[in-house]
Image (cartoon, rainbow, N blue to C red; front, side):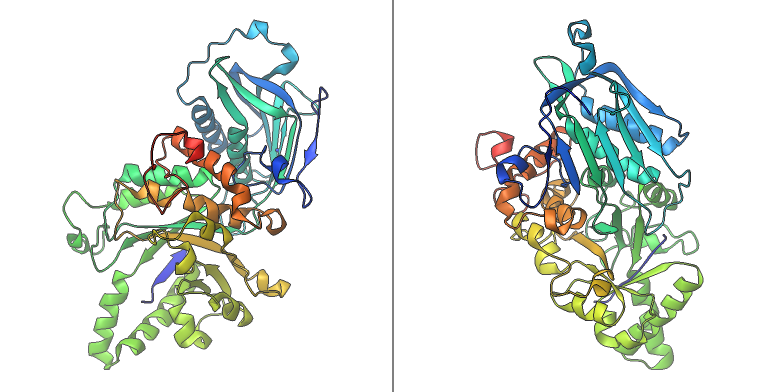
Length: 462
């Protein structure tokens, strides 16, 4: 059934064994790098550094976004552990006092195409007592902070935060600008705390678009102040989102995408009566009229693929077509000159519990698209967590770690992706355990989506 969406929218000179990740790098060497998703370029050594107890932020930027993100990152890597090492016993040259961040642009306006690149060096070649992160925008710096957090490890024996395999030099940027996750609160209500946890977990995997399917025929939990009776369609009085709730979620997002299918149902029925249209005619009328309204307000417009399949020649040339029904559609969309988002249900629907993480990893958005100009029209992809069988009790383990497999496909350069998923099993297992450590209920890699552990054992072996 067709749906309409709109969106506004890093030289340590001691004992260095530097390794640059490239096509010829052996799998045994890749396995030493635990970062997920894999960055575009990585070099590392074999030295060990330690974060001091007063490790802090150094930056000329006054960005509150940056300061808040640094504090969140620090809390995440500390994980409530007590850091009480005797730092006087450490070699002074092995201590990191802070992270120096340089952001080129003061512009914090967020829109499609915002530069997300960064460079991370641990330690800084010029100031070895600090790590160094530079980015063109604050949003690139946020990704750099996420990567830095994955280099840090709490040593139980030393009671200190360590960075192993230093010096690190990481140069990174996303392969696709649109890297999304859909959640559905129409089939089951999700408490605000659950939605916020999902947003936090998305940032760990560098996903940048939350597609919030708020309402549908099953329930209408959203307050629309101009139509106050609409949210009478919620499951209960307590299973509702106020306009302020929606605004708070929007403010948390790197990119917010909201969807409203219910309005299509009301409008179509009205047109059927007023203009004697059949259902297909009413739907086409609504979509084309809604496109004009959205464009007049400066919105980007995204339509599910039915609109392209049924009346593609009539769509605005600014339309982004969201593929979900199966393969081959993205190829036809870009051949027509329109942009496309890939979410083919046989590979990237998280509610399909029998689709293993390996298939999520191998799903290539540019399949059979060889023309460079047409490849650029595929702006990215989205994994979809439809809500028929998920609520607050099981959504995290249904999303993770399979969504992380897709996240690497969307972030990492194609020539750095593993040709066989088994090559990344250990690294993904490590990321899954990292999510667990951060309070995200990510399921084991073994088995189907959200399967429980088969028995006793290490997190890293499940």
